[in-house]
Length: 367
Image (cartoon, rainbow, N blue to C red; front, side):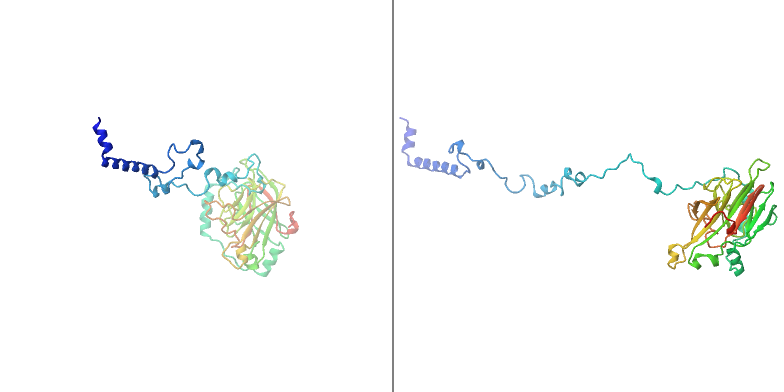
């Protein structure tokens, strides 16, 4: 007989413990979620039985701050940016732009003229001459002088100590003849064509135009083979009589040999027009007008000044007095900006013959 089994069967304490342990096992099965593995046939499971939502909060081992660090940036993802939704407009790179509306290229400046140049000694002498003789301040002219200028009754004066002749052809009409051995010379009008105290738009509130013409009769070659030259422009006085206009302070001019324009420029000037030949009639003028600020009562702005050039009765080109002034040119537009009286200045070099017309009845150009 198995005493152990018999004793266990007949022992009331063992039987009670067995009952209690069985109940605990049953309660353990009941406390678990979901059905027992074999209590529901597989074909009776529903979709919800397989779906489980994640518990709230971050995964184990992570804090809420960790999830915030790796949070996605605001806004749409890169694939749906506004650039892809709205591409830039198409540009036809093969098309040729219209350059007609662009400003003209800047005029080239030269250190030396490509045709002829004065001696360096003369340039140094002219600088010393100008330093010793400052420009004259504007003066108030007599009524007779103002009337004479308006009527073109202006004469030319031959500078003292210089060869050449000046003869009258009529009222406001003069002839200049020089010899082959005559170096640079400047013939200046007897009266200003522009009186600052009378003609300035700052006083009159209206624009003022000054103009005259020169007929090039002959430009003969010199003994050294170079061709004679002429220049037409304006200057404030006094001006060195042995220098072409445009080279020294307070002057501007267009020169016949290279066609360059010179504004207080004792170097090579700037490109402007074709060389001027014998038989042509050329003219030069300046239009002074009020800048917008001055028209509103301010007087601290300079006048507008447009220099224009004619050839055989037709306007051929122009430039602004303040246009493209080189940084190396410290004078700028000093003396010819409408703050001084301006005289006609005709320059010659070598053997030339010219006719100068101040009377508008002799002009080819019609304003």
